[in-house]
Image 1 (cartoon, helix red, strand yellow):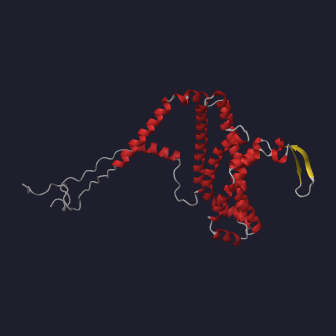
Image 2 (spheres, rainbow, N blue to C red):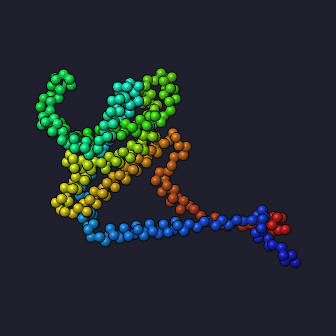
Image 3 (cartoon, one colour):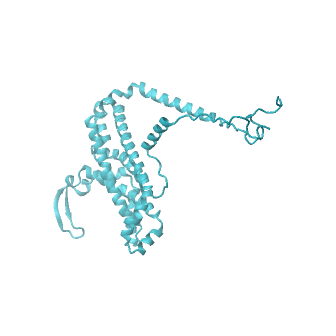
Length: 335
């Protein structure tokens, strides 16, 4: 018979080398309380939105894909695209001018940025919408400072129609902000890159185009994506200043007749959310593309995460519990 006071084989011994430690996770009651409060408020909000008849969800679902609304959506996207093209191109030129060693060139760019960042975009849109009050009903295109008329008596409404006025108002304003974004991206590239390119005989413009800007894109792209999303929402000011039929202008024209203000504003809000979500999704992939040179392991895309989640759930099997060898354990445990 064995010693009755000796521990059994495989039993845990105090201070022994084979002692198993059972980790007990810390409790966080505050997290559970916060989660319950958030879920309660979310359910209350959903219930209020679903049961309040003033939301008129039937009107929303009926007219969400109406041709009149879709026309406004297309005009909003078109206006955003043209304004951002003008803003990015102008901002790049202004950023290069700001970094120029010639004082007059850099000073002119600084004055432009100072003016357009210092005045509200709403005022600028009103200015371009009222341009006929400055030029008159007809405009003569002439060579500056010479008085030589090239094309006489062009109707102002033909030279600067509502779309052009809206693009000029939004694009010129955006150019001032994009100039600072591009300048910050260029300054983020080390001076050694430009010096190395100059040692190879590359011109300043070629160095900027082939060496500096590709590396600066990692810094330029994220704020540019934010500016694009902001531009899409800023187009809602165009209808109130220039009467161009973008999304909010179209919706406004409907609810001033039907007096169904809330459901039509919900329609506009849903479409703005859809468009900004698509732009956010695209921004993620553009940022990921330009992060290739600075990040060793790129973050997985949403599709990759979803595929990995399904693959893990389908292939994961519970491993059988490990069983110790038959017979007595180590000497330290079977003393």
